[in-house]
Length: 244
Image (cartoon, rainbow, N blue to C red):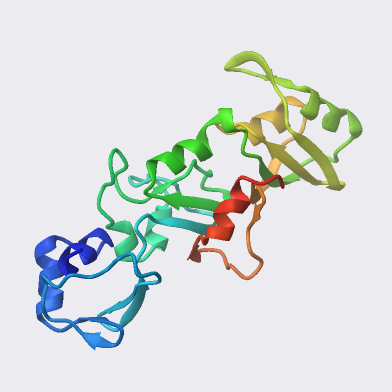
């Protein structure tokens, strides 16, 4: 791959801007400055580490990320009253070009602005579809703080099924465990609109705080602070399809 095309694919701007970065000696591979935009680079030599304006990057053919979503952010490129989660990513990740029908890096599903926790992002359309599709039954685990004390009746109804106002078919949680008087761990394999809040409301309680702690077998790392992100490795991707 030509060096200028490599930078373009990684989100460093238009092809002209990428060529300009190279012409001005602002790009290096293996510690060696590269000033030829047409230089051929072996992108299969993994990991391919390069620097742009002194910042180190690793070439990623497709972006697979996790983000610890903080409260007060929307999962939208066109947010309303709250800032977008995409502002938490560095510019090259926000600017990665479209791949197929996917217009750059996208959130895999959404979390409400007042919901925190594990959020996946990618520019791989197949991956996004697989993670979002209810046919694949990828479990998602939520930590729920409730307004009223929990009881066995509520837990039983959550796992046997409740009817939401937009669907006559009952919706059931894959798991519901009380971890405290007001602390519920809920596992879902679907992704309906405001599903946790609506299910909890259907059993006579109310969500006061909501946090997604796990997707599949992948848990939100304890050392990933709210607002921070990291790349997903091959082991992480494998865990996404494992049981929690």
